[in-house]
Amino acid sequence: GNSVTQMEGPVTLSEEAFLTINCTYTATGYPSLFWYVQYPGEGLQLLLKATKADDKGSNKGFEATYRKETTSFHLEKGSVQVSDSAVYFCALMDTGRRALTFGSGTRLQVQP
Amino acid sequence: SQTIHQWPATLVQPVGSPLSLECTVEGTSNPNLYWYRQAAGRGLQLLFYSVGIGQISSEVPQNLSASRPQDRQFILSSKKLLLSDSGFYLCAWTLERKTEAFFGQGTRLTVV
Image (cartoon, rainbow over all chains, first blue to last red; front, top):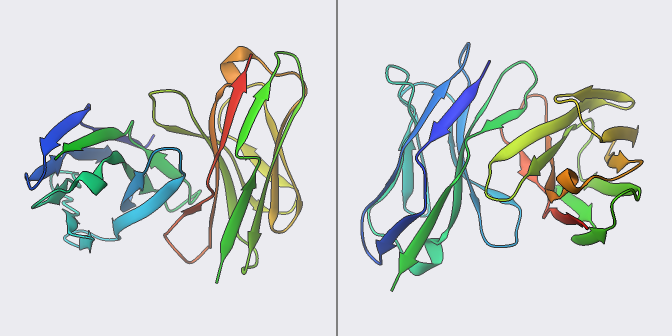
């Protein structure tokens, strides 16, 4: 079946530091890949997505590239802010059920 | 524009009591609808999904059930809640030809 593995948290960084959150996946076919963000007490918001190999999704300074050869979709940001503190979920959508399979989430804490 | 409403936002229920969580989508037709649960400190688990009125697929055996009485309404229910049903419940929707999933604000359920 499909699965998503992402790095354990929490990740604690100082403001303006470089961020990488690793994500790898296992899936049949060619899933679409996503990063969702969850701020405290809220639902999930789509951060970025990529629908095919070598696509780069980007939003709000965050980027992730769909790497089929390494089955990865790592999230990066060059300079994090305190407001980026949240839980980040990597996910894939299979073409059959059109349901999302999520990783376990990585909590990011950015300190001033 | 499309919106998704989920209520209540917070719920505290005693063990053995019934449950009904409601989710409605506005501004679209024939959405695929989903219920996810996020247990404390864990990722999101798909509970149910529906591709049409009266069509429900269950992903995991559990104490919960789902119903879709109208095209844009999705209800999560239980006859008798267990302590293990505590968690953060999220409703989501997608369209058949779209890859993005959109989430409600979630319901935090505490069973005491």
